[in-house]
Amino acid sequence: MHDSNTPPRAPTPLGDVSSDEIRAALHRAADIAADYLVTAGERRVTPAIAPGDVRRQLPPSPPQHPEPLEQILADYRRIIEPNMTHWNHPGFFAYFPSTGSGPGVVGETLAATLNNNAMLWRTGPAATELEELTTDWLRQMIDLPASFKGHINDTASIGSLLSLAAARHRVDGLDIRSKGMAGRSDLPALTLYCSEQAHSSIDKAAIVLGFGTSNLRRIPTDDAFRMRPEALQEAIRADRAEGRLPVAVVATAGTTSTTSVDPVRAVTEICRREKLWLHLDAAYAGCAAICPEFRALMEGMGDADSIVLNPHKWLFTPVDCSVLFVRDPQTLRSAFSLVPDYLRTDEPGVTNLMDYGIQLGRRFRSLKLWIVMRAFGVERLQANIRSHCSMAREFESWIRAEPGFEVVAPVPFSVVCFRATPPGSPDEQDRFNERLLSDANQAGDFFISQTKLRGRVVLRLAIGNVRTTREHVAAAWKRIRECASRARR
Ligand SMILES: *Cc1c(COP(=O)(O)O)cnc(C)c1O
Image 1 (cartoon, protein in one colour):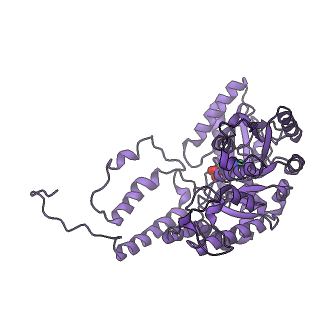
Image 2 (image 1 turned 90 degrees about the vertical axis):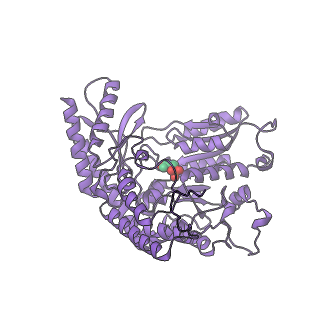
Image 3 (image 1 turned 90 degrees about the horizontal axis):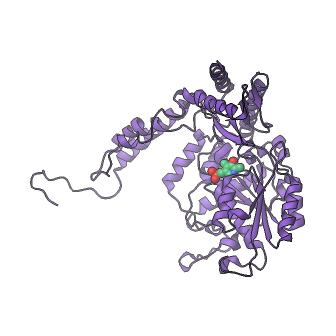
């Protein structure tokens, strides 16, 4: 509305911002990104802020008029960047670290620039073919049989969901794709199996796909936190005896708490005998399978029906990038392919990535993976993984040598689960370890996390950042020891 008191403004310009402004801002962004990456270790891993602190610095309503990109980038530097938890920090030892390596950031930037939507080969020819190529490179790197075909999703959670949907679709006579599951007297309860250490994304898949969490059997583990195959066999037998229909088993290579590896060979044999789909959740440890010595821990992997593995976890590719391999891609396609008239194309024999999952549109994620694979080469990727595992083993040896501490799980890869063992009841020990965690993380130069094993609080140090060196790990250990001895006094 015109207000006679305000001077007339120039008409709002149309279209994108000017070419000069775009170029200047992208150069500036490149400098910001490079500065950030090379100084990643110089800030706190977690910002010392309280909930709401970021929102308070930003206007509550959107700008009506264009603002210069330069000013927006200045606000980014001032308000956004310092108030992040820095997953790129070499002292990030919590959860599973994820690195946005330099080459990965270049790929992500260019993918955003192309803004491709590779739902069909026709809508993204190079994106489709590069996704097929990079996933096939990865297949070769982990030595899977050539029958496996990969495609990229955002996360392992989605990969596992798709895989379990394909498993259900493969069971003859259910026809859930058209009839659904509700109100059917001809449908027995369908059951899934995973270990008690499996990731919560398997429960979520059971929820979304209508199996229900009470039909997900959580199989007990041995003293190294691996699924017990005889307990799996017994659970399947008991379900069949009671008229339920087992559908799929999820084995985990690299469980989230301890990185234990289920006995893949024994589980594949049970699945073959019982005609069950075997999905291997190798979100983290599957990356280590690019090294033959770690691949040996997952022996039998090539007999799974599907495998999910996250390059965004431990192959130095920025989030998000998760690869799902399936041995029989036709099953996955027939579970999900649905081509409306407006998406029909006439290229015969091409891959249309929309046929492999739920979503239609997809980002050009293979670009960053391709650039990372080329810039590192298999050898440098392997060397980084080996270095992380050897730093973890060294950290483990320090703990084993330290009175008042214990290592609570084997260390097959780059995660160490440990705890302080002060005198006192188990509950007092738990409280001590919780306090130790928060004291040790206080200074912000590193960040470790916790989990529970057999009901007890356990501290967890995970190495996986491409910039982490032995010095970072040694500094963390020094501080943890100091905090523990202060708390004991
Ligand atoms: C991290 C992790 C997941 C979940 O990964 P998203 O990609 O975040 O969904 C699933 N399974 C295991 C074993 C994991 O370690």
